[in-house]
Amino acid sequence: MRWAVLLGLIVVLVAAGTVLFGPDQGERRALDPADTSLRGSKALAELLRAEGVTVDRVDSVEEAAAKGPGRLLLITSTLFFNDFDLAEIQGDRVLVNGFGSLDALAPGVEIAESSVRQRSREPECSLPAARAAGSAFIGGAAFTGPRGAVGCYPAGDGWTLVSYPNAGGTTTVLGSADFMTNQRLSEDGNAALALNLLSTGKPVTWLVPPDDPPPGQLPGRAGRSVYDLMPAWIPWAVLMACLTVVLVAFWRGRRLGPVVVERLPVVVRAAETVEGRGQLYRARRARARAADSLRAGTIDRLTPRLGLYSGADRHQIVTALAVRTGEDQQQVGGALYGPPPADDAGLVALAGYLDFIERKVSEL
Image (cartoon, rainbow, N blue to C red):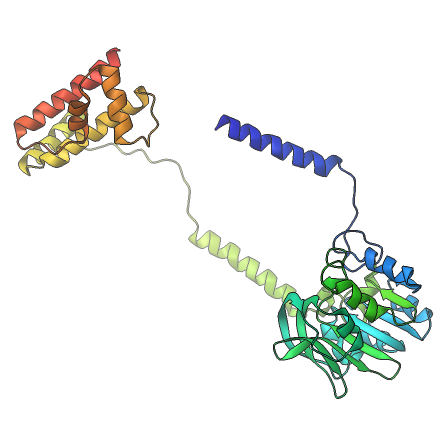
């Protein structure tokens, strides 16, 4: 146990030292073209630039709109942005993790299944970008598209990739974008699918959540926080609930006062208790129960003296006791684990032998 505890302490100290004194890797941002962690998408951004595609990372609607039309807008999150402001940006659009913004950014697309296991899937569609890529690691959610839409990578009653033409280009909705991350890009046809979807000959505007969103860009309509959206009676309800808990605690709580000292009406000596229990055993002829009590007490007292642990089996105890006392091993085993005595004389003899063994171990 000492070695196990020491090893555990060493592991904890090494882990704590690594965390405290190791290099700061910064915050990991999913699908960020500047993030080199497993969840980031730095590798995909570099592949696009190697293909001659301009990739601009932006973190606000104003920056995305300032890039001008005729570009491909990759939306990795809509949590901090106004859906309708994003919808006014003309051009191709790839939507990821924006299932609550489908009405504004992908009208006509509906969620068929909100929870789809991510795994390698075959395209099973006529979309050139998907057919050329082949299998890809995708899932997350499944959709149905409007008339004229093409669905790829089926899952249940829908498709995990839906693409259809819009007024200013093409809209593509993805159930998940893990195939675009640094961790998954080299698997299956993930890299080919990501490049085929984003490398369309147009510059890419890569929209990511802001690093430090200002208060005006908090979630909710018009930048209102969750506290602003709460009804006015919520704080009063919470206050009344707290007062109720306090009153119930005072009402039903245990009153802790001084210790009450009570004089016992009768003092019973320990010897009388032992003698009374013995008389009850004798009256009920409970020789087996009495023998078990004697044996259990002897074993409990002898086990630590023999250097054994409390869970030692009978073979270990009998062997150690026979070696320690020089008594016959079968005789010791019969005394500790044998059948119950047949009469009172046998019970008395058993008690005497157990006492003899215990005294012999104590004297050694």
